[in-house]
Image (tube, rainbow, N blue to C red):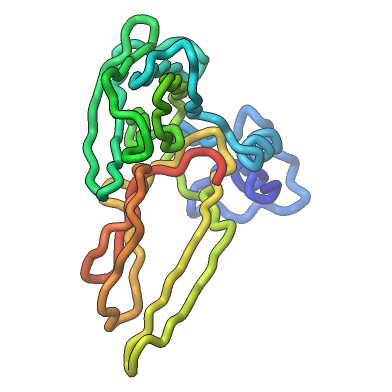
Length: 242
């Protein structure tokens, strides 16, 4: 991280500029041009990401009626955010899904009412902005009380320099002659305070020539792996942390 930060802070020179001797006096900080919207990476942001930046929180609350979800949306400075579209994703035990929506009022609140309780369905509340999506962990409504959900909007970036693969796993199964099934898992780490958004159209991952099929697990987040002729595309966003 320190080397990445030093490279980021280095002076920006034209491509045809001759190399600067090692004994050349340092360039004053004011002369170090920064790209617009430069991503901030610091020791503090890395520690926050390792601990887990809380952009969303959902918990049961006795002050909310049964079958209800009360949502509060805040901006980057912690102020209520009115006029924000809030999406409620519903995943039913039979595998079906549906979405409901609401808009925050002047106090940044939105409410969903008359929702089924119990274990037959799970709910996920989220907001979308600038190509990113922030959502709370899925939950089930208890029969005697509702849920409060807090969502925070954050800065976004499409700078992939600080999106790191922190963990990977591979399983190989020889199922029948001439055919192999490979299952791969990866954990991405975002050490910044910004939400990384994959480029429009997604980031293409190519699979070896001759692959037969590609499948991925369904997710209630905005991260999607979409098959194509060459492999698959990764779409969605990665919040600070894992």
